[in-house]
Image (cartoon, rainbow over all chains, first blue to last red; front, side, top):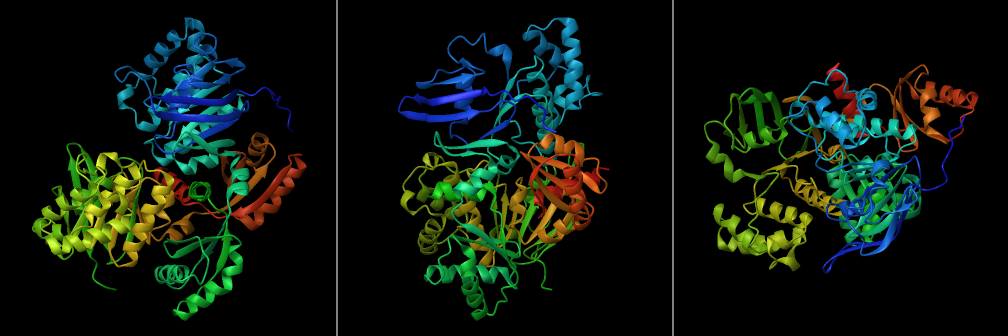
Length: 318
Length: 309
């Protein structure tokens, strides 16, 4: 039964947020809203404006024009009100490598002004949440990337922030640790925390409740993964399992170039072939005939769901 | 079966106390597009560097393009193109000058160079940027130029170390289109990648874990190794749905994907109706519940977890 109270006030609202550095516009009039208790993904290639946006939301950088509100407060030079209520995990987790897990957490707790009794309780909770129990006395530099990342998250949430900002938290972390990290984020969200996370891993987009895709400082797609797929994908993806996939790709590309079949993309996936076109199913017969002429058995054809990456590529090309 | 173009036999390399590559035995057929995947530190880079003849072998051996790696490393060089993760282009040289530079290293004749330059620039989509300095190219274009430089001596074998890391999605897609073209023309390619979805584009995939090749097969067969099937559930409230479904019989694993849940079950046909009934009984509404294909990443994670147990 759904009984979780929902807070109607958004956690973050950006209005025409813009940042210029000289002639260069890093963030170009973006608008978005992050709801309370969701994981909001901010995706884009390197250099697209993700970190600049986070820094403006934290009050570390003043917008050139536009504004941003975090937890109902307009972010301006005075960050004292907001800081105690937000957590931040930067790209290079700022942990002290020579300190142990416990020493790092005590250091961050003290920096947030927690008193000793309170701090010990919070540290226990954080260790438990991150699965770091038993590693309290390990030196930070001896931890693997995945464990260091969990420790950095624990440090960022010691003061129980309502909203946390994570800048590329999973960069350079192996897939299993990435998966464990996302499970931690879901745990936090279940407790009502709002998570704003940037990543350049397209497959992680599917883990977010809602997301914005940013390119050259502008938002080019915005919504839940399902909404974005529905709204933005013009073509459909048809998967073929032909008798000779490599030859099938060559044949279909030749047919496409000769203008015989209007396909947008023809891609080899191991022994499978993906073709993309609007209403792609209506080309099935032509595809089959074209392959047959080349002595290839077309095999089974089925419509498959496009990945979010397929969708973004389609948006960026148009 | 043709003679493998690359054949390794218990190939091993130690760095001080760590065994970076541990008894690798692998045969690559001519024309394969072979993907090397695995977590950081699994031994992918060391394997590629060994095959390129850039590192000494601790134990075991290999033949590459018919030559013995330990005894004839210099004979191998003309047959391979190796692109390191941090491939060093000359930043202050233009696109054309970089190509010329690599052509000189590999003794490409001026006539060949002229013909290949034109073709490679078209191929890499760099023709209109031929006079641009390398450090003024975008990350994606730099990668394509690096690949073009790697191809200037027309090697039969390409060894590419994470060529798409940190590249935007459009450039990544373009880069794979180029690799597909090379593959269709018969070049043998070994490419390492941290992106599990790229494994799907390879004809065969090797998963490295702690220096060992633990799985090596076609993407389809690797997926099939996963015990169980995937059910994709779109509940209105994923948290309550997760709590309920986790404890149902036959549910092996529940993964959250935003508002969707992926349930790994022992039998999809048997469990799907049971799960739907349990949700209805628990008054948890859902928009859809269906059998879904297993993603490569899910297959790998599940297989690695099994190895760890």
